[in-house]
Each structure stands twice: as C-alpha cells, then as structure tokens.
Length: 221
Image (cartoon, rainbow, N blue to C red; front, side, top):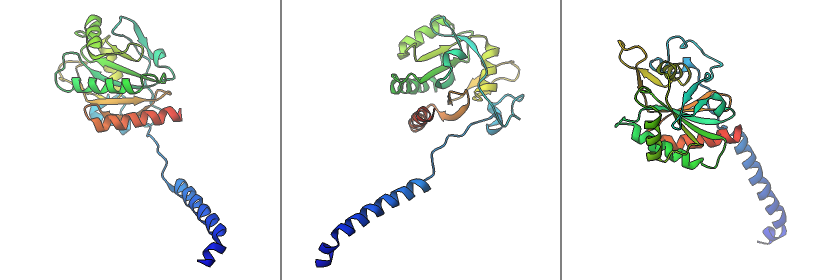
C-alpha cells in the first residue's frame, strides 16, 4: 500500500498512457469501412445487358430523361452531386412492390432533411403507369416530390437504364423485345454517378445496411 501511495502519480500516468496507446493501435489496425464500386462485369449476367457485360471499370450511370408524377421532366441534372437510391417497380404490382415502397418511404423519412440524398423509382410498365397513375400512387404512399421521383417514359429508354446503367432488372419474355421483370434490388448511386451497392428492398435488415451506407457516403463525399 505504501508503494502504491508513493508511486500513485506514476501509476496513474502509466495507465492513461497505456489506454491511449492501445486505443491508437486498435484504430490503426481496425479495418476501415469501404464500399465497392460496381461495374457490369461484377454483376450477375442475368441483370446486365449483353453489350456491357465485359466492362470492368469506369462504369457510371448514363444520362436520362423521364417524366415524373407531376408531369415534370427529370434528368441526370436533377441528381447531379446527389447520393441517390434507384429502383424499378410498377403501380399494380401486388407482390414485392408494396413492401419495397414501404421501405423507400422509410429511407425518405430518414433522410428527409438531408439535401444530399434523393430517391428515384422507375416504372417497368410505363405504357400503363402514366402521369395521373403515378400521381395517385405518390399521394397514396406519401411521396415527397422534392425528395422522390416516380418516373415513366419510353420503355426502350427505361430498359436501357435498367440493364445498362443500374444493372438491376431481368429480361422478361424472350419473344417480347424490351420486356422487363423488375427485381427487389435497391441500387445505391454516389455523387459521381457510380454504383456503390445493391440491397434487397424487401428486407428490413438490408434497408438498415443501406441507410448506414448512405450515411457513410454522405460523410465521405
């Protein structure tokens, strides 16, 4: 006890120094979080157009022009410098779409006041999902226009974006050219128009992971 009292300052300093040193070593050795940058060659070929499957670097989302739920033209410029989540759906889908939409609403709520983040949903049945139908769907599901665009347009162009840019939609009937079968994929795109992640839009655990990755990108970019 007398030794402890005699060297109590030294012991205290030593313990503090040891704690700081261990903490620094832990942080230095701990793997840093990183999100991959996806290219067509990294993805299941079923989801990628055959003309781009060979691309292994520098893949970015192409320019686009569609019409949203308010009849407004939406282009890549509306998403310039933004982190956004893209998906593919149709308003009459009764299987996975309602779940996906509910989870998109959750993402919208989480980043409502974060101007860096936006959402973009494409109809795979644009001939049916015209502007008035998208507007009703938007109102029904609480879509906030400034945060989330539901878009329709030329089916060939939506097909092109789905399979050549977002790498997220399967082919439909082989005999029907440009037929598409949407998947449950939510696609995370960064401010440089690069694909940074794919998430199952029907699973809460995946939505949690997506939200964490969006926050990471917000801090990184």
